[in-house]
Length: 517
Ligand code: FAD
Ligand code: NAI
Image (cartoon, rainbow, N blue to C red; front, side, top):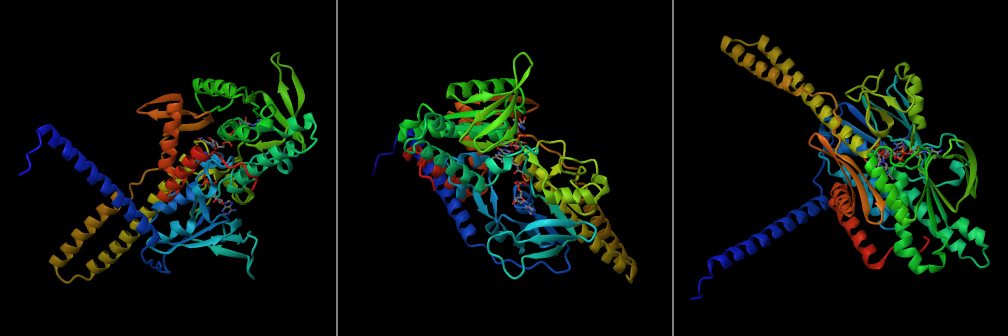
């Protein structure tokens, strides 16, 4: 017989077996989750006498509502011009090809197919919400149109999660000459234009001034979108562009223009200073106290506040201009605000109460960037608002069911033949009433801030994290690793997680692709 291993080695052997078993368990769970995603169960149609719940949008607010909503309680209809959910926090990485755009998109059809009861989806834009008639007018805005491309969707309950559009403050030339960074096609557009500027600058006999202009990448808006994009673009230049096209080395330059005295106003002073010093190291120029007033196809005109307080106008030539100055209200929301007298003082979006009900409108709720609450317009807020509404609607459906049961019980109680039977029903009624009180105890929406994170380039990130009752501010490479793992774990699905991780590995091994298409 084989000699028994020493105690110490026996322990190691068991640890080894345990590691194997847990690895096997994890792989099994992953395989099962992929299998069940690929083979969804049969769905059933909710009964036609259920209320119709229409949800506008497929962004953070709407999708987090859909994820947690028990769809068997309502006839759910989703309307959005985008048939996918977009994980916006990683969108700046798509502008340089570090991440492929499809890695951060999740088809809405996949999401809806996983629900127990069917959900209707119409790829269309809501053009008008008639809150008195309880109708949404929708229009197919895609390239291919059928005989019917405009119609109406009636609703009993409506959730508006249409987000916001890009703010331009009516500054002339912005829409015609700059790129935005909100949607997938914006990121693709930027990626193409960066390479177009580079290749045009390399065109035979290009003058020196023109080469400088073409390789000047200007970002307007020092909020997190502008800062993250500037960081990603400088990384692209340092890691790839200057290796493959060394001729651009002396002229490629990124400038961030901000009207306020500093960038990232929502972060702590310490992190603002850290970001500004990192940008200096990266050779990104920050132009604070510089407000853009006019945009032409080759330069921007900005009002600069000089150190002595005087103001001057400066022309800044650019090859690529990315405009990231925050959010503005969408026309469909502005129109709805015009219909509701209680909304006459709102400017930045739909005013809602603490249950996210649109002030002055019954059975209409708003989530995310189109709603005005006390919180910043972020994915974190929109996601929590959507989840809150799912809880609210699930509770409302349960409450309705219990109330119906109570009605039925009190009818049968009045027809009961014996005292015993009557008492038995009375006990049941009391039990249901207790249940009803418990379900009705849903409090108003409360936002729990988990912190703010932003990538600033050079494999560094800044984070203001809420911890217990305080705040932790940190910046650097460790924060960057935290940023990566946090966003990887927040990705919508395992599929997204795998694709993003593969994109990061691909870029690390082979660099980013510098072809223009
Ligand atoms: P969105 O997610 O914008 O979704 C709106 C939906 O409505 C879309 O599906 C759209 O197609 C649809 N829609 C538009 N018009 C209509 C219409 N007329 N009818 C029907 N549907 C319509 N926040 C963070 O917390 N952390 C981050 O790291 C972060 N990074 C960001 C990076 C970038 C580049 C950007 C642009 C934003 C970032 N944000 C981040 C902010 C965050 O993305 C938004 O706050 C969030 O998307 C708001 O969610 P929403 O559901 O209100 O709108
Ligand atoms: P923002 O509103 O946060 O910042 C826009 C900036 O543009 C402001 O600092 C403003 O002073 C500046 N600006 C406006 N007009 C200007 C002009 N004419 N000239 C020069 N500067 C001008 O907008 P942003 O960055 O698009 O963010 C929108 C929302 O999305 C915010 O709530 C933000 O918190 C959130 N977001 C969060 C991210 C994160 O947490 N990592 C990343 C991106 C966005």
